[in-house]
Length: 254
Image (cartoon, rainbow, N blue to C red; front, side, top):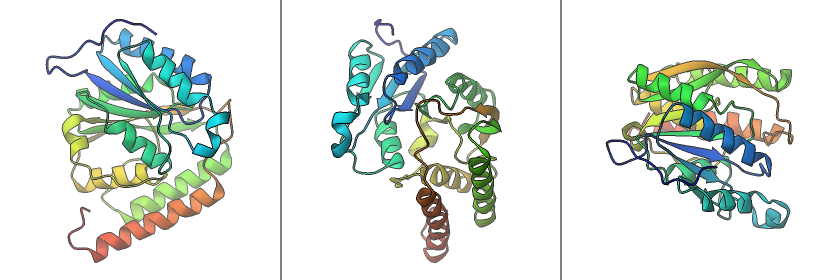
């Protein structure tokens, strides 16, 4: 990583903040961050990286990731380490990263290497070219197994059935990127895997202009998926509950 001072855009903020979700990524996060920086610098973007490595207290001793991201951040003024004891799951990690982002555009991406880091720049360019509020990828080729592909397709079909204004192809795909103003209009509260759906639902019902670009989703070479059968059931239950709440509450945001 470089150690030069962060540059900023004409607004005084970085062109882009990238929240990298590093939970239990371990040593692999070093190479991923280096590739991400290379991609951003090739595009001549000013940027900051928010490296989120929140941890469960019971696992702290066995997980080196919090210390790794702190080390990376100590060597680069454009990087910020977020390593807090967890008060939630994936959604909580996303929110603790987004709240620290200061860029004109704000993206988040998983730090396990399944999402190509080069997609951050591709999504940024799509956001700008379309003058959109939000951009995200959709996975046209996946290497994570037939079961995960089936579950994802079924989930997206149910999402669009319950929320007809949602038009994105792949709600859980990342990176997702927003203009700073658009992100400020989202009222996110999910602490778990539902946060991706919460984002696309709110974006649809707030009439966000959304750009979508195709991508390839790679197999995780370092660990098995954190998305368990129980998590899938919780996904589906939360989706239905969210729809019911919006029907019952006339003051709901969607």
